Length: 227
Image (cartoon, rainbow, N blue to C red; front, side, top):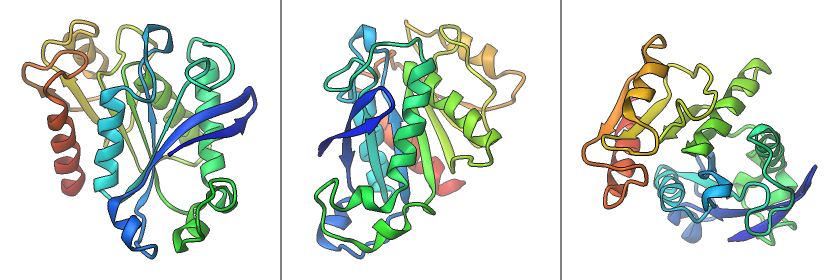
C-alpha cells in the first residue's frame, strides 16, 4: 500500500506492508513497527529496492508492520537530497506520524483494528540498507539521546567509510556481503572494531546481495529469535 503523508518539507511517499495474519485476523497482535531506509537517492535508490523489500517482508514474518519511505526527491516524496541531514529529520517525523492512532484510521482508509490504539506504545525497529544505514543509525542515536531508543537496529551493507557512521547499540544486527565492491568489508570491520560488535558476513554476496536476499531474511529471523 502506497500512501502520501505530510511532513515538514511537504509530503513523503511511503509503502506499508502488513503481516499476512493481519489480513485474516484483525485482532492479530502486531509486534511493532519497522521503519526501513533505502539506498542513496541520487544513485537510483528507492523504497522498491530489493534489499529494502526483503527487510520489509522479513519483519512482516516477525509480526511487524513494515514502512518503507521514499527519501526526498524520490518518487512522489517532495524536497531534494539533503546529504542525509534532512533525511534523518524526515524519518523522525514519519515515525512520529506512525505512532499517532488516527493515522491508521481515516487517513489510510483502514477499518479500525485493535492495534491502532496501541501504536504510541508499540516497539519500533529501525533498519537501513547502504545510505539508509547511515540515516537510521543516526536517527537511532538521536532518539536514544531523547530517551526513545528503538527496540533494535538492523544495518545491511553499512555505509562505513562512505558516510559518518555513529556508534551503534550493542544489540544491532549488522549484515554485510563478503565481496561488497561498494563498501568494503574491511571498512565495516574498522568502524566496529572498537565497538566490539559482530558483523554477520554473507559468503559470496555483493553490495546488492544478488541471489543472496534470502540469507538476509534467514539471518535476521535467526538472530531475532535468539536475542
